[in-house]
Length: 279
Length: 312
Image (spheres, rainbow over the protein chains, first blue to last red):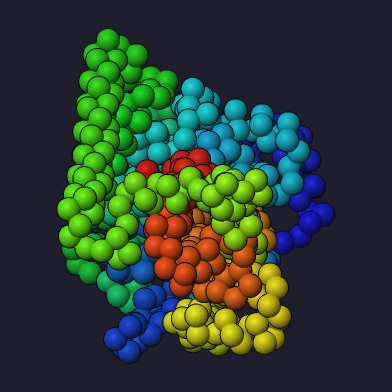
């Protein structure tokens, strides 16, 4: 983690204007494979030889059956896990540990119950020594953005699951990460909340242009959110389909839920679902 | 924890604060106020019943005790009457003539009032347990965050935990003298293992995602411990301190066996050897009540410092 670069980062962000955290660097998995020894003593091959290039600002969704190594890939990108072979790079840097530049949104909100919602959202900037006033402003802006301004002083356990998930997203964005890694963030939510959060996430990402790596079980969610959908095979995970989704180009950036009933959407969705069936 | 009653309290607490209404929320309406009021009155009823039950049992026990002694079922030396115990308690807290008709007076027991004995013991427990909290937390954090340290030292911890304090007090006196130091160290050694073990459990029990979340937010190792691991393990640490304080009370008699006056443990022991059983029982009851009060205080402090316990 480079200290002086941090100031430069914040300064340039200020010049680009608030909310602009557009990623400028490519995220790369170079021949990453991973295996580990399970409790039974067997060697589990989680991921086999994944090579993947994610250009800056792309929204990539990954679908596949349970245990296909989706989360392993995310952990490698986050720096929580070093792969058995191959390497992950962000720009020119080999990823060797977690960094605020690569924010992670977990399936469980993981908010800290000893802090208020505002305290949680301010935590990342606080870790990095962002001045008090600046981080208060960021928290306020982000809570506004995710629709929780009136809950700033509430404790996490006073909020519903959907609201907690919004707060988690705000907490990650408060660091102005260039990459956001999301591990089934909406998996535990009811259908209505899920649709609303999908729309919000898409709006935020179109505004800020972060690179997003998004894991989901739902083919529909993947096709709706992604600029690109990857399908992984069961263990050892391999990328078996790499499908570009260019609906926004056809229908414009403001397309909402109604997009899901267009023939193009249905066609891509069926193709992705088919790939999962085959593997 | 008394399951059912705690549950009722939680429900009432949740009904009370009513966070600001979300989209489509109904809090603040008459209906939710009625629900809150209903939950509160149910809670009051539960509390009244709980208090009544406990008071009833106490009265029954005292009556039985009084009855046994009143009909001389057992000799008074074995079981003094409640009145005799009360008298011993009052006498231990007041002054009286040395003998019938003399003006010279003697105060309390063993030249100290009972409350002075109590304060002396509380100070020793305070020093012993206080030191155990400081050292135990540090040791617990080290062992909880390093697998190898834990593997290396856990056997000694279990060894120490199993030792009866009465067994090694003699050794401590040889090493450290008959003054307060050996007593402090004995109480420290008694209180230390439960605190370390609880801290290790607390630290080890922090979920990996909680720590990963902090690291991905840019936390350093020290910040992760300060902002995530420490607060996460507080509930466990508090139960460790509770157990340690309780164990310190059971150890205080051993600590004060030699040269322990003033000290309530020493007084309880000495009065027994002098066949002053009413005073022994008065001391025991005092120790028990103070220990229960202290425990309630720790629980209260725990609720204040860990308001999220059981909610997240």
